[in-house]
Length: 127
Picture (cartoon, rainbow, N blue to C red):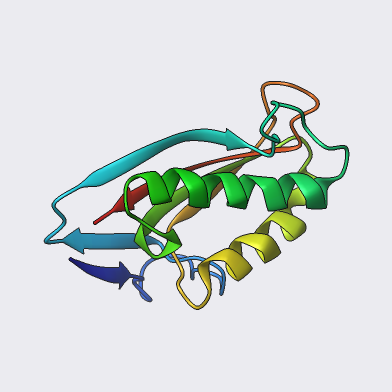
């Protein structure tokens, strides 16, 4: 499988350092579409802090990916749903840490379904 970031530089606004405009995927045999994943513990409880929820989200995403024999290296698209726009920077920092040097197309939408869920993230992965 090959992943090629597509980041045009002319005729469009520039992408920032934390994402790319598009990811071309070729040679993939499988795609995994991951539902919105919350920062809930195994009992379905959300911790109070944003940091704890972000940590649990990425732990949960890694577990779901592992079930399909994938890792965060397979993620080709990500959408974050934030309870409050002020969470954007913390969410960005944890996403960058989770993905290492890889940048992928990403979208941030404010407002989660349940007020206790401070962040929800859905991903698309390919292998």
